[in-house]
Image (cartoon, rainbow, N blue to C red; front, side, top):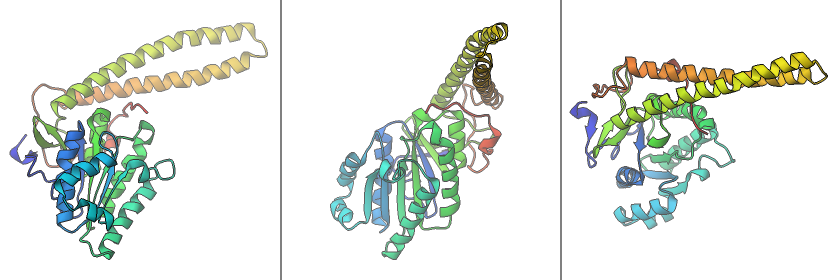
Length: 309
């Protein structure tokens, strides 16, 4: 860890990002969101930027307006003339009942262009993704990569907020690889998450990730064994009775066997993630050096993670 990897709350690079920034905030609670995003939007308004704050638990639209109003006395006037919008995630990401990466990207780019057409300097936008489920994760990561490419040379600054509680080892790797900058607060200081081969997760993240992986390994092995034995008995009975239902039993048994193989795959994947962390000292007790972002291996190089939906 170097001094360049740490930022005080008042000087964090998220408060006044340059145009084209696509950053990520990994937060623990609503206070992390308030301490980061209130100065961010205050700065955007001071720079005559158009602002869009997409909120979700634990800081929804009503509460966000309340806390921002304390710092921006002219907030109501700016809301009325449309310089800033504060809305819930479902009204931005889930307009048609589900997430669409193309629709979300088009909305972001369109807002940026409209802001300039209306005479503003550009767009400051932030979205909280605590609503995101495991089923939507991969598509959302594709969307994040698309945002990275789309706004790099634009007059748009974007901060994505991810709750730490839903981020395991691979999730943090994916987040870091799809943003120009990712930060997390540790011991009262904002620290850069840099995930090159020698980089480490914050201590709390390391312990959580290793513990979750160990639990996954034990669970996968236990479930597979418990299913495999009665499945073998079922197949043997089907062979013995050889009735009209035997083929149906065998077919259902094959489908169950496919599920068991998925459990085996999850077990192997968890072991591989644990091995990767151990080999690269990510699970060690001492801090590893932080390096500049951009050298992180692509997430496809890492084993799959088990996400709850």
